[in-house]
Length: 187
Image (cartoon, rainbow, N blue to C red):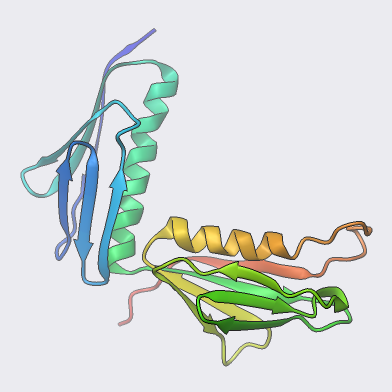
């Protein structure tokens, strides 16, 4: 059965400009600018009264209805990204060989993982900043406006330290996400 109209609204906060043209959403805020394309989803995106973004979907099946909330979440994440930004914290876990992580150019280099000589390189996309935590030992932070770029970089770092050909119950070494979310507003 099809639903006649599914509609959701997202509030635009003060200090954020949102413009929509043919399902391409531009969000501009104090931290920068983000763009998201939703051309692959067949729905109406409108700005209502300059204060809300409305997402409408007419005569939709169950699978198409799920896209309404997804698009709203993406736009909401873009708004949070340009106002506060996202921070992911990663911790190094090792039992014997200390993992050495450095930032060189636009790459994150991982050395001495399980004592291997191989240097693992993970590219940092544009807009993602690498920070080595000064107060906590064996921790790095990845900060950026685009949640997709920041989380993708964390996933690539974690997957580059997968243990292969050994018992995973015993060899728990790696670099794992310990904390993630929006940067808290400084007061």
